[in-house]
Length: 154
Image (cartoon, rainbow, N blue to C red; front, side):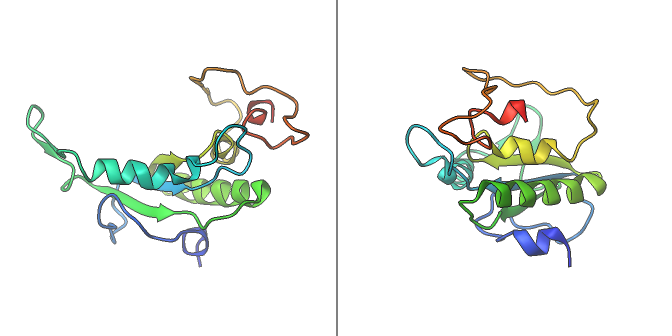
């Protein structure tokens, strides 16, 4: 059994799941917002992105690309948890498995902390660029070290 079988829900999807292993790009969502500090709700982000995607034109006439025919696989969302360490472990396991398969990975979130789980599986000499309104470099936030406001320090 793979971590994908263990941690994914397979619903809802942007596109139908690609059952063959030749997809180059894999999408999955992480519905997590347990360390938020403003309003809860970013856990609905992955499904909101998929909903928006399903309501736009997916054929690009300038390039002649139809997103229904490109080789993208959507695995659905991770199973829901409110425990940060559990979410990070799931994300690290899933991302590691996909990276070993040579997949390009698109992750839909969720709060900032989800990034830490995916980053942990890559070599330490890899570059990392963050575009954000603030640095997320606190040692802790609200007495929590694994927080959306402190994940870059980890």
